[in-house]
Length: 224
Image (cartoon, rainbow, N blue to C red; front, side, top):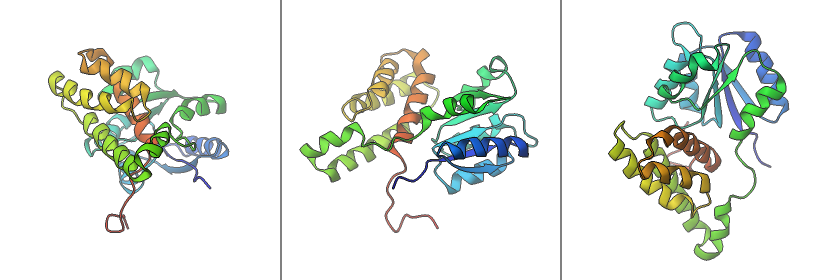
């Protein structure tokens, strides 16, 4: 049985957390909630979430600061702004904080679910499974592991076009072969100097990481 994907709802308003939790839970998500940015940072250290819904207007540490801190620690899970602020007010800062999208408040159940569903990990076998007949399952898992590492490394590229393009070239070369054509297409554009595609490339990479799931851990690496 496939485990329900996990989502973290970060909001300082208990009513918003409760309503979102019921809607998402009925749609098959496992929902955790926290009420502030500092708690969100601790939560993603403990668990690999398929998605984080991050309120923006919170006391002490706002959602932009919390998202930037998560990215600064190497967190690659998708983070979507969950806010009463308009998209016009937030658009410029979303990308700077490493966020991947926007859900406005107030929200209806169809609006919320439509926004989170693109980030739901697929339960079907990934396209790379077809390569197992040629290379063996263990080798394909190793390839996917290397690809996952490349994606995570590329997402931490410094704000330098040359370094960004170099990492993008490595990602684009393997992505299509392993069954990620959208990642391959966008990252190839970045590797060829289309810097305007960088934000789209980051979103595509985090979607791919969500689909790949958490790396398998050996007993010695397992978290307590």
